[in-house]
Amino acid sequence: MGTPRGTKPWNAGTSQGWKDRRGYRWRRLPDGRKIREHRMIASQMAGRELEPWEIVHHKNGDVADNRLEITAVEPHNVAHHVNAKRPDSARRIMAAHAQMREEIVRLRRTKAELLAACREMLKAADELMTEFISKKRACDWGIVNQAMLDAGAAIRKATGLESI
Image 1: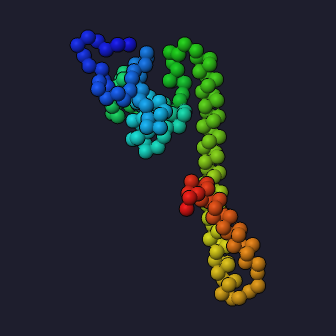
Image 2: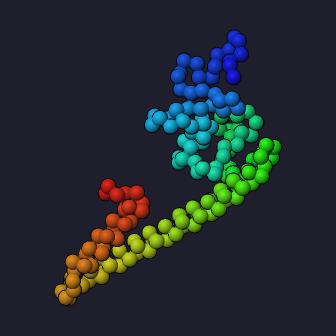
Image 3: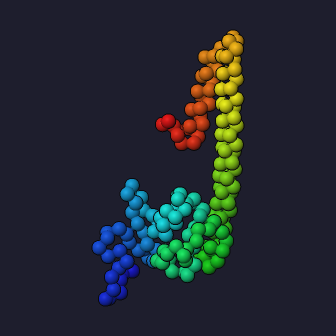
């Protein structure tokens, strides 16, 4: 798909991307990955990477127009495949995506609940340990201390703060 005579391509002189046959603009990220420009822009605006089941809908139908006011991030759904060539395969894919979405949401919720419980347990154990030490009661503090260190390490690992 070439550029019409007398016009400049959208990325002229930048060496930052290309258009595919369907008209989507593509970019190469600094880490070498290739990504569609509209997904890159939507990710930047959301402040996170888009989930695989999220699509960027072009409200005006122009896939090369990536202005924020005419794009919207939506979940992958049946409406996205209205005029698809393979509606049966699309339905199977959407069903698999829906199951995956539900499972990921459930796992994230469970992780958050477990982290909250671990933090409360760690806080209670610290208070208990402080109370026992102040009253000079006998206890195997090495085991308690190691359990607290392990719980803290698990929390840091689950939250992505392993290096702390």
